[in-house]
Amino acid sequence: PEGFLEVITGPMFAGKTSELIKRIERQIFAKRKAALFKPSIDNRYSEDKVVAHNGLSYEAFVVPTTEEGVEMIYRKTKEEGFEVIGVDEVQFFPMSIVGILNKLADEGIYVIASGLNLDFKGDAFEVTKELLAMADNIVYLTAICSVCGGEATRTQRLINGKPAPRDSPRILVGGMEAYEARCRKHHIVP
Ligand code: TMP
Ligand code: MG
Image 1 (tube, rainbow, N blue to C red):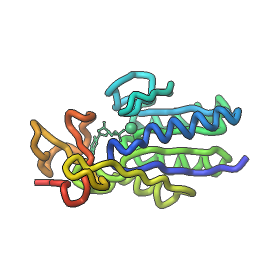
Image 2 (cartoon, helix red, strand yellow):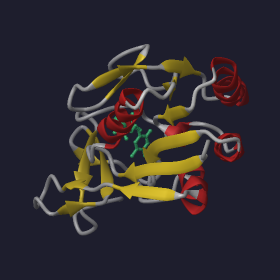
Image 3 (cartoon, rainbow, N blue to C red):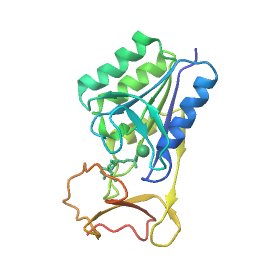
């Protein structure tokens, strides 16, 4: 079988998870053994499902965002003989996931990783950055800017309706109550 590493990226509300689910479902329709993995840090809507902002959901293996969690993805894929795997919210995993996903692709697995390219400050998430450099294909999605309706490539974090300051912690799980998609012009980091 032919291994392949595909990365789906862009800001929040761009449809990354929906695109991931769509691609996995297409592979299942083609009778390939496929599975989804997601980090346990993301408990926004469900414990055992990958859920998109539009409500689309799919069963997933929940793994911790530790070295052990990365190992579990590798082991489970091998044990179950998955031909296709999807990993959602890939930016939350440690750097070791880059090598593991590349290894799986080298071993003939079609790997689809979905995640944020940038944090709320507009700084690169290292894991996604490395995966993008090594990807066989990149699916770059954009969203609609909540201020002007233009092309959003950034994610605005809001605290009590105001732009979050630069020293706000990097990881803050949330949805529409804390984040908006914004274009470059309307993305603000005080
Ligand atoms: P999404 O890409 O599926 O919309 O989910 C992104 C998740 O990442 C969401 O739980 C919010 C979180 N997040 C951070 O922890 N830090 C950030 O800087 C940004 C932009 C999002
Ligand atoms: Mg998502």
